[in-house]
Image 1 (cartoon, rainbow, N blue to C red):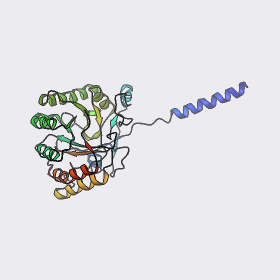
Image 2 (cartoon, rainbow, N blue to C red):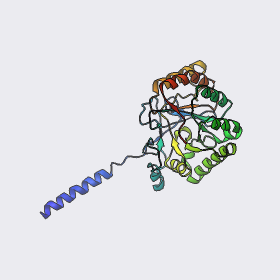
Image 3 (cartoon, one colour):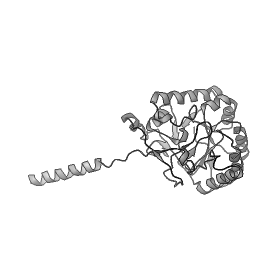
Length: 293
């Protein structure tokens, strides 16, 4: 009997050790310019360079992201990656929200505001569609009146950092916090009572530390499922870009999706032309929402 118990104990110990070695490491963040063509990955514009966004768990995307190893997260940062009780049901295990959590579809526009923002707002107003604008602090500083217009029209605001620093997430928690707080403060100079419930890291280069700091500031980290790479005017130009945006959004949008496009960071005339076609189509097929505040 004693021998049997010892043998059983040894087997249990071996099994425990084997399971302990099966932990899943954090998925590497894709780097940007080389992976910019992948749908659902690229974000950017002239203000911040190009970098890859994370692929949604539910959407197969094309492209060749090159993994870049990030520093091993600290114990506190690793804990931050786990969803908290306050995290939305649509947030994944890394604390990043990539879907709306229902059948509704969300339009999101990054890198503004810019001179093109009022044109996009007029189109959204005409179709009675609400969206989410991920604004950059220096752009808010330049065009505070457009932030006021965004809020007046009932759209949602998202913090997209002060200067579109794609490497911000690898910096210290204090540096990340100062950047995000400065951006929020600038937004509230334009709109004192602005609700800022979302944070989108430039390039989608989220780290556990960035997700945690954003959470401490009351913001949910926001990813996406569809990206037509409308920032990449080196690859597609003019009508070719417009048709690329239309085709990518048409072919990849699903219920619950979050669509990424840009109203700033460069010439957005092709994006505006694409959404002139897409807005009525999307409205007919889906319930389009601004992410809730």
